[in-house]
Each structure stands twice: as structure tokens, then as C-alpha cells.
Length: 279
Image (tube, rainbow, N blue to C red; front, side, top):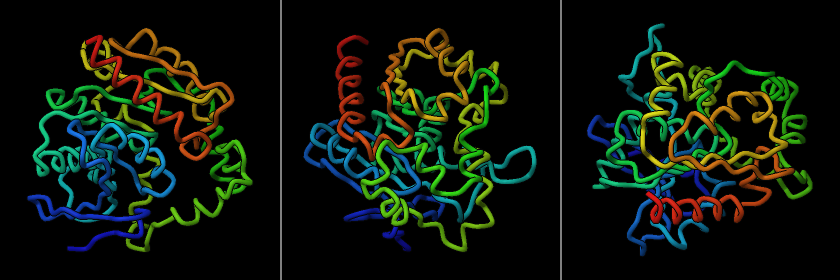
């Protein structure tokens, strides 16, 4: 089995799914009974969040892949990576013998969680969808992708509170795409920021959000360009989602896992505790 150790800071593990796909993951908090599944493209900047969560939960950080065999095909004949990531994470949970889990996803990492929420709600105890959510309304702007096109310095200035905290180095460590990934790089923009594409249409997505009883916590930073780009949609979530909690961190930007990892993790811990008592 090939293990992508370069995508995880610290100890990495791997598991082979029944279809032969090998997924790399990190595992923390094995002494705890309740499980959190946390998908991501890599686990460098996220490790402090995972370690804080692991003080109370058994946490699996699972790497989302961009190559290998796929069976989730979109109407255009290409791999629907949003659904493929979701199916991978679900099959990972089954392979590990997990029947009920807490879900935690930050930005792109929320997409496979939304897949499980939609297709396997019986597995989900509750779900933290942080910094990104399904877009039920049209975009207000496209500042985030404009910043990406301007290059790393412009994007980092908008994404992190203090660029002097070693962030460029951390992001350099985390930039772990290989040449084998390049043919599928379109999948990042196509699916990683658009969890609503897991549904056939936005109307179906909204219907599920209104009817599903799974507790969800949304967290955003007021100064995150992505929050502003989908301002109408994000605010609309207050009305659309049953059993939801909405948290706004004033002055925070997109890379909160770097700026205030303990605060991000603690908001999740508070929510999981509240959800267990309330629902």
C-alpha cells in the first residue's frame, strides 16, 4: 500500500478500502470512545485543531484523494469528486467499524461530510460545517477566487490575521500536490467550494436542510472573503437549517485553524456538548 505521509504532520496511517483505494489518515485521542471524522486535503495546519479535539474525542483526520479508481461520474462524464470524496469517507468509516460519528469539516473538508449527511444520515450524530456551507443563494461576489488568481501573497493577506506567524512556511509544507494530481486539479474549484453540487438541484438541497433533524453548527469569520462572497446564502442558513447553531467570529479570516486553532476546536466541542444535551 502507498501511504501519503507527506500530507500529514506527525504519525500517518493508511487503510485499504474494499475497492482497492488506499486512504491515508492520522489518528489522535484513541483513548476516547466517541469518534470524530475530519476530512481534509492535508493535515499540517489542522493538527492543533485535531489535538485539541482529541482531548475529548477519538479523531480521524482522513486525506481526500485526487487520483485512483473512481465510480462517481457526473453528467459531463468526469469524476464527480465531491461525491467521490464523500463515498470514500463513508467507506472509511465502515471499514473502521464506525456506525455513529460526529462530523467536522473545514471548508473543502466539509464536502464529504455533507455527502454523508445527505446519503447516510443514520451514521451522523451531529456535524460542524465550518467556514463553508451549501450555497442556496447566488454569489454576491468572487473576491476569493480573484485573490487566488493574484497569487499566494495576496491570498494569504486576506486569509490570515498575522502573516508574520510563519504562515507562508506552513502553507509551503502543506502544498503537497504531485504531478499525478495535476490532471484533476480542476476538481478543487469545481467541487471543494460547492457542497450544494452533491444534490441534483439547489431546491433539493434546501429541502433536505429544512427537513433533516441532524444538529449542525456553522462557523464563519467576519473578515473571511468567502463569507462575503456568499453573504446572502450564509445568512439565509439561519432560516433554512433545522437544529442549527450559527457562530460568527468577529475579525477572523479564512485560516482560523492557524490564527486561533483552540477557539475553532472549542466552538466544536461546545456544540457537540450542547447537541448531546438538547437533541
